[in-house]
Length: 286
Image 1 (cartoon, rainbow, N blue to C red):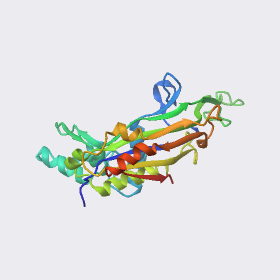
Image 2: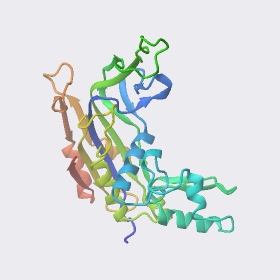
Image 3: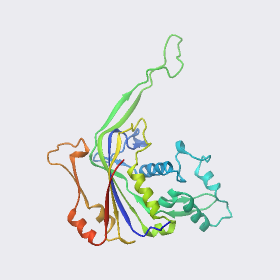
Image 4: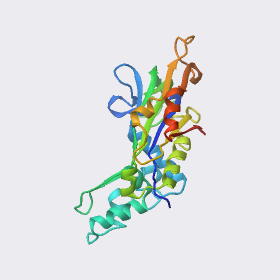
């Protein structure tokens, strides 16, 4: 497989409608927001979904969620110990872990098992996702209409279980990332791995539905994929990401759909970078 020779940057836009994209356990599992009301999704959450897509592609993953374990290993330590023993050198563990597990090769991993501390720094970095505008978080009280517990009195019934469900009414989120060729050389990350990341982002919410995120409530709209002509690139990641200009359309008071935003690349700046060899793909989400 060919080693990655070109730096890559990407920006992805997706919507949330009547969904809880990423609940905050320290705030009653309400959708994450900042102090100004903008929606947030942690980078850990985004990487979890990417790993899930990798598993759907039948790739070997080290960090597996409990509900998607595809081997008999119930912990990371058990999975690590099934591949390595204390006699293996750190260099051997580093190389073999990157070869076996796609997520380690992409995101890196800290191996703190068998009295080791091996830091693997992956080439793929992903930012937290941020909404383009403040989001409205709706809270709904829910009850259960069936007896969950045995009633204390024979003729009575158990009390209804009260709960609260939170969701974002509507939001358009953006997530940014980059693939570093220097760290790609260290982990053995290839051009084929870059295609895996691209496809995982394009299909990010496939097989991801739950009561908090009903089927169809999360949708990838567009993925902007920038490929540089060299390892260092023709511009910084910040400059590449700023090529995408987004604003609310003049006739829109409050955005309620994706089309209420005007989203376009800065053609003048892009043309200058394209002359230096930058290539951009605009990919529609699944």
